[in-house]
Length: 85
Image 1 (cartoon, rainbow, N blue to C red):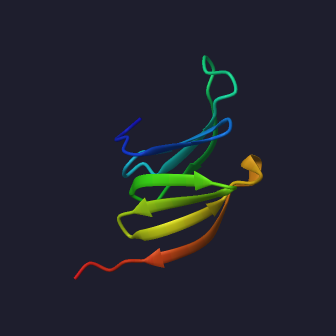
Image 2 (cartoon, rainbow, N blue to C red):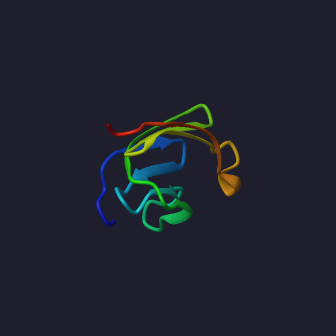
Image 3 (cartoon, helix red, strand yellow):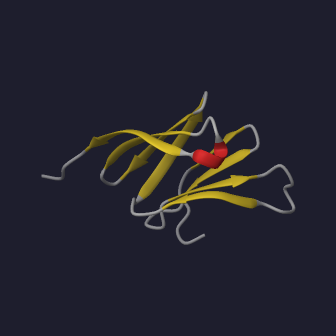
C-alpha cells in the first residue's frame, strides 16, 4: 500500500482507499493469498462504504459510487464533484 486510509468489507471483497494511489479491491477468499480484483487510479481516496453491491467512495474531488455486483466488472455509477474555494 502507498498511503492506506479507509477500508470496507463486503462478503469476500476488501476495499482499500490507498490515498493518491486510488481504490484497490481484493478478493480475500483465501486470506493467505489475496487477489487484486480492481485498481481504480486517478482519484485521491479517503474512505469507502460498500453496501448491497454499491461502493460509496469519498475522495478529495468528491463522492464516487461504483457498482461491484459483478466483481470482475466493477464500474462507475455516479460522481458528485466538490470544488475547493
